[in-house]
Length: 165
Image (cartoon, rainbow, N blue to C red):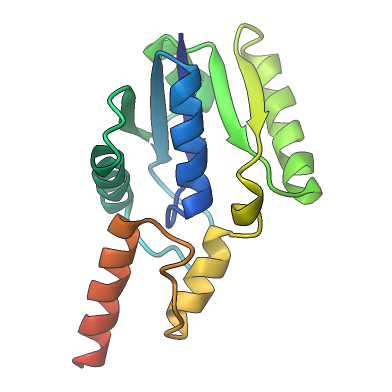
């Protein structure tokens, strides 16, 4: 069975990666669908770089059944194209659930054959958000406890370039 885990992943956090690792154990194939555009305020990385970072971390973790692709269409159309009947969504807190519930119902209306499954990250990662990481990074704070190694490498490179100016 194929599952799709969509998101902006800007940047990918350890919580996102926790869900990738756990969902990969549940499905024959997991497709991490990286949104081509981000409507989130203060985007950090272009889609191609987000895709590259996730691929690097998946390869480092030796997870062989995970593919990373750009999501440039409606999620339900992407799922149909990839042959997936399952969407994985991460839920950390109640406010996440409200938004995700609305999206799941909308997707169900558009494609009743596709189910949305909610997964919670490990409890020690539940408080980590990409927007918090972006904020910490903007002010030069330590981001390594919150992000994967590929993301941290890019953040370090970016900070080094800023300091050199």
